[in-house]
Image 1 (spheres, rainbow, N blue to C red):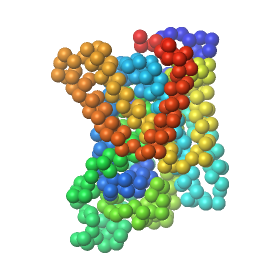
Image 2 (image 1 turned 120 degrees about the vertical axis):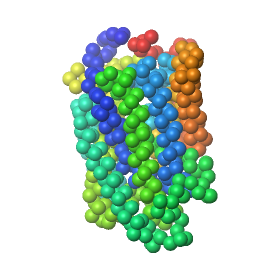
Image 3 (image 1 turned 90 degrees about the vertical axis):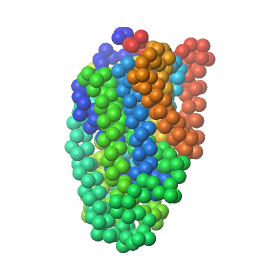
Image 4 (image 1 turned 180 degrees about the horizontal axis):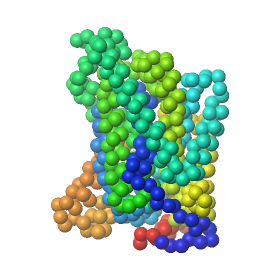
Length: 462
C-alpha cells in the first residue's frame, strides 16, 4: 500500500468484523421495519401488489449482490462501487459513480432522522421537531465515533427485536384474516383478496410497469446490503466473508419483506388513501389500525431506536466512502482521508455526515427517498458493468461456461434488472440526480484540469 504521509494520519482501519457482525450491520441499515413506512406509497404505485414489487426488487438486488461479491474479491476496498468502477472501467467513471453514490449514502442517515422525528412527533406532538433532529444526530454521530465493531454490537439486539415485532404484527394480521375480517370489514366472496389467495402477487389486473415502479421505490428498502462493501477494510477474511454476508443480508431482508407485505396486502386490499391520511408516512396508522393504540405506542417507541440503528449503519458506510475518496485525493486528503489514531475511525467524515444530517429538519421524506433511489441505482448499475469490464473484457475470463455465467450472464441480468428500474424512476429523483451529477462533472473537470488527466486514485491494487 502506498504510504500517504504529511496530509493523512498513519492510522488505518482495523479488521475486527466477522460474518454475523456484517449481516447485523446490514439488517440494521436496511431496517426491516421500513416495510411499514413504504407500504402505502408502494401499494398505490404497484396497483395493490406490494409483495410482487418486493420480488422484482429482490431479484435485481440478488443478481447485483453477486456482482458485489466478485468485485470485493478483486478489490477489497472500503470505496465500494466507486473503487470498482475506478479500477475496472476508468478513474473518471469511478469518480462519477462515487459522487452519485453520495446521494444514496449521504442521505440515508438523514432519512432515518426524518423517520425518527415522524414517530416522535406522533408520541410528543408539542415538542419542536428541531429538538429531536439535534439530539438524534448527536447520538448517531457519537456511536459511530466509537468504531465499526461497537456499531455492530449496538445493533444486534435492535435487529432481533425488530424481527420479533414484525412477526407479532404479521401474526395479528393473520388472526384477523383467519377470523374473516380485513381493514374494510367482513371478508366476502366479493372482497378483492382472500386469505391464501395468490392475487396479491398476480391477477388479471396486474401490469408490469407499475410493479417495476414500486420496485424502484423499494430500492430504498434494500439500501444497506451494498453499503456493507464499504466495510471491506474492517472485515476479517474479506474476500470470503463479505460476499457471503452481502448476499445473505439481501436474501434475509427480501424474505421478511415479501412474507410480511403479503399479509398486509390481504388486510389492506384497496387504495391506501382509503386507510391512511398520509400514504408516504404510514407506519403510525398501520400500527394503530392493526394493533390498537397501546401496540402503536410501544412499537413506535421502539421504531425510533430501529431507525437510529439504521442511521448509525448508514453513517458508518458513507464516512468510509468519503475516506477512500479522500485517500485517493479526489476530495481533500487532509480532511476526508483522516483516520483517528484512537478509535481507528474516519472521525472527520463522521462529524461531517452528522452536520449534513442536521438538514433533515428542512427535508420531506418522499423527496429524500427519491434522491436515494437515484444514487443506489447508479451504484448498482456500475457494479454489474464493472464485473463485465474487469473479468470478461480485461482479464479474458470467458473461456469456460462457468466463467461466462459468472462474469457475463449474471452481471448482465443484474444490469438489465436495474435498467428496467431506471425506466420507471420518479421524475423528481431523475431531476435532482442529474443536477447533482452535473455538479460532479464540473468538479471533475476542475480536478483533472479540463479532463486532460484521469482522476487521481490510490494504487493499492495496481
